[in-house]
Length: 252
Image (tube, rainbow, N blue to C red; front, side, top):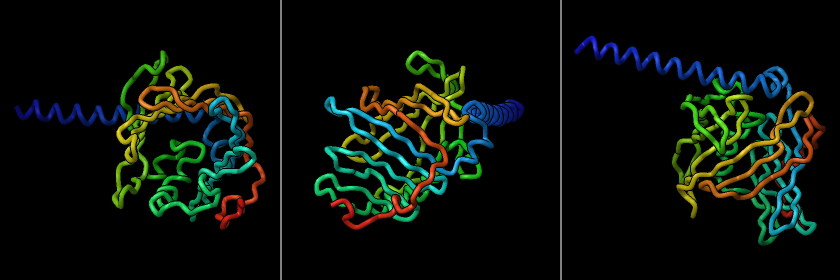
């Protein structure tokens, strides 16, 4: 019995080591295939121009992100700019769609952006250990007809209702090209709590030696939702940092 117990423990330890090595191998190939770590680490900011459709109307989307975690995600509807996320590294804000005024986000949303915004720039897998993230290889799984490697990513905990909660998501890497074709997570608050949200990535294109997905489709429990089409990506553009800063009622 003791020998069998010892053998079981050794087997479990070896299985854990193999999984870790397999996860790292997949991640390293992914980073190499999209441009290589050296090139990715030299990206300090990106500017994305994209669009989506709502009720047949095309809505432009503009995204700015920096290595320090600053973000601006904005749309334009009927000539009016609506900021969905503005974050200067300290203060998070958005445009209230009802009164079209800029408002600071609640304390928890602000804290969650502080915790993970910088770590998600370009890829959460880039230097993931230094960020305090963990990965786990979960085996192979088919996603919309494509064979993938499933990787569980655990990032820094988020704050929900005053308590720290796990921040986990699952990435599915194409076994041929080693790029993510889907990321899946579970909504943990609001009316859709418990629903699975899936982001489907496709149409990878090269920009200055780095590959980005130019098409992203969001699904809820497998049902198709909003699709975003990228038209242009700029790497290391000149950015006026004031665009990230909260300005009281600046959009009147």
